[in-house]
Amino acid sequence: MKKIRKAIIPAAGLGTRFLPETKAMPKEMLPVVDKPAIQLIVEEAMKSGITDILIIIGKGKRAIEDHFDSNTELELNLERKGKDKMLEAVKKTNGLNIYFKRQEHPKGLGDAVLTAKSFVGNDPFVIMLGDDLMQAETPLTKQLIDSYEKTNSSTLAVMRVPHEDTSKYGVINPAKKVSDGLYDVTSFVEKPNPEDAPSDLAIIGRYLLTPDIFEVLEHTKPGKGNEVQLTDAIDTLNKSGKVYAHEFKGSRYDTGNKFGWLQTNIEFGLQHPEVADQLKSYIKDLANKLD
Ligand code: G1P
Image 1 (cartoon, rainbow, N blue to C red):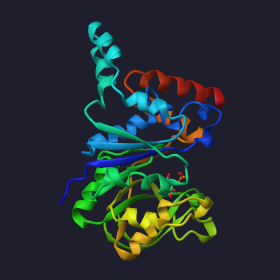
Image 2 (image 1 turned 60 degrees about the vertical axis):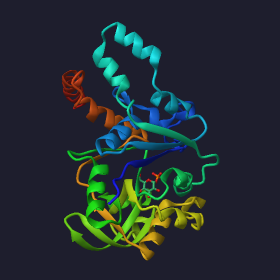
Image 3 (image 1 turned 90 degrees about the horizontal axis):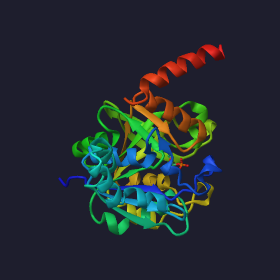
């Protein structure tokens, strides 16, 4: 069986949920303590055995390219000053092959993924959405790869969400559990209203797909919001082949909206060796004042 080495990170979205901050700054570059959110996604990919990443960008996203470019001047400067830890942090993703592609006219997630067709070729690959951060002992992307190695089929990650939130996600209609946390799926529906939602199992930003998705995407008409929806293409793929849903039990953070971003920074701050203690006592003091 072929090892899964390629990932696509769609990062062409406009970030309208975070204006005016995202007017000139890509939402994927918003900091999570001291790293841009997209770096945490790339680190998850590295830990999962991915070696080649295509980041799909759009207008105003050049900061992402600069971030993953090596900065020789900065590296030499840190080396000369003996700032080894900082140097290590700056060079963290240097060993990966990171490529960029522009989606010229954003027409939805399905359309963004389609622009990666020649990068992917005939290999199964993963899609990692740029503002969904996951934390788990085994990275979620690795969990999907492990599942693929058993089933040989496309598998995407789902998580239970409050019923009133189904209209923010792709939602699955689970047929039956085939093993612990793995579902056979009857249908995939993009952003259903709560009264029409077939379950509370929402698609979160990690997908492992076989390359036949591209042929389906080429024939997928615009759906919800008049955009080409990846969820619709996956629903079609599930009719000719099989797409499983793997339930994620770790923590998920959505950095693409204001509250989610604040929450992510607090929780990651509480795990960060440099600021954790200080932040903890600050939160305790603050909570006392709020009572
Ligand atoms: C996209 C997908 C949706 C998925 C969600 C996860 O929506 O279209 O199916 O549930 O990501 O974050 P977006 O958040 O880009 O509107």
